[in-house]
Image 1 (cartoon, rainbow, N blue to C red):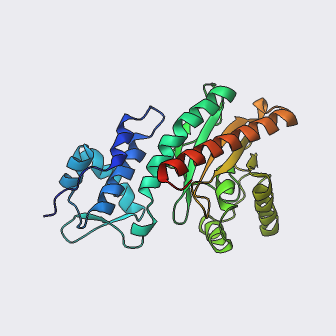
Image 2 (cartoon, rainbow, N blue to C red; image 1 turned 90 degrees about the horizontal axis):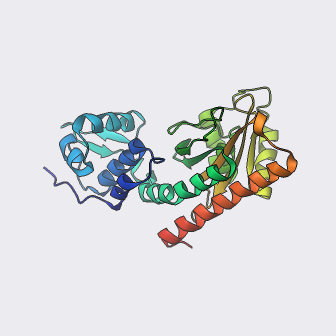
Length: 271
């Protein structure tokens, strides 16, 4: 029976502030442990390595298994699926979460609105962190939510900066669905929208996913190559200011994205 490897550096996520998702951090930790293990691991080994009860960990592992990240061998031991192993950038995810949280909290304090962080996995874009607005009426978000690559500000910020083949793959995987009368579904118009995002450096969601919901997003450049993450600020239409205010908000999100990206590059030695 393989010996449980030493706990990786992602263990520091346990000490993170309340805006971190404990479930996400533990899922990342489990993936990192399995990525480093030369052999599949039993549930009790993973529980000991992560510091979770077997019951709590089992829910996480079953979710990862259902999502296609894990598989079990004949003995019921867990391992990363062969096609996922090279695609799970767990160290980058943990670094990104640590770098983004204080910046997102600062953005929420400045504008009083909900901020979100998303990451590009193999064939989908997913919310990985949220800082909620203090207002009773607010635009919410949910960790684990799969985002629309053609409509949401986070999704558009990431999809716009992909190579043509992967951009097409993301659009086909999710589907070009119409959520509101303002959702862009024409492929030529979507391509033009992506070009505008690349030119100005930020994206918008003008009631394209939710009626009365507006959002500004910006890509986070964590390394040379395709964009893997984005940050956003979501605002109810009733609190959306004039054009000047909107430009200030968009630029604030851009600055937040740059701050996060610079910090991640510094930590990963890619700056």
